[in-house]
Length: 296
Image (cartoon, rainbow, N blue to C red; front, top):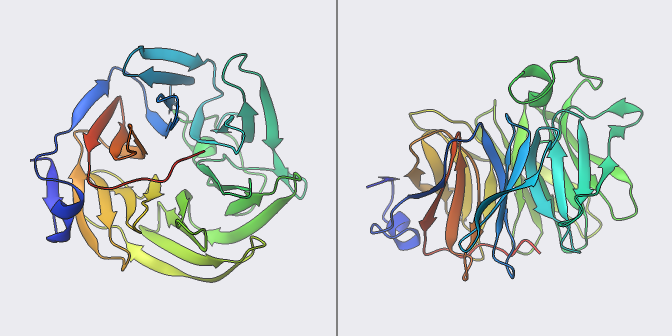
């Protein structure tokens, strides 16, 4: 059974009969999966090999973009275009599905180059929120070794008019992030801090009341990484040994165990209840009783 059950509420969200299925393997370092809710395909990154892949049940696996400048996290914008975080260039970019035209949309803050954008989400107003740790500058397998221009690892918000706003600058290494279903709260985890923080979001995008929401604990390989919310307020976050499931009260109900170190995930399938998980050299999926939020 691929679970570490810590509360009875876990099996109500992830049936004990659910099984982990490998859908892709033999890759370098997988990350950043996103699911197109109407066309029913998955895009994910292979940071180490500088590829982005597309997968569907009908077509299987194909290359979406190469080289990808060691792209990591991805999301869709409100027009359905793919937004990617590039480690090698330290850029946040937008590119289309067919011609693969790439346009940098965030490259620096107050005249200093970004560190290495890591994960990104889009809200209903078209604002892009992204984390900017230093991983792409300090790990040769995930980027290009080089010094930082900025003195901090922050979280940013890019507005539709192109204005870049610093949300916070006191993380050790910010990584995964997600908004609550009503977009009144922003959750961001800290890979080196081992916890998830939450802050309240006003209609204009400003944030207040920043506090630690939950610790991500357990044995095994892995740190807080990708993160998503569900329609009923559950929060899922990568961590030691797999994907950790929290209820709305920040109690960890259990962990979906993965054979390799898990890095990120997204909800997909017809009902947005299938969890697609990137984990080191493979991609897995598992059926849940949860419903994710559509990414477009």
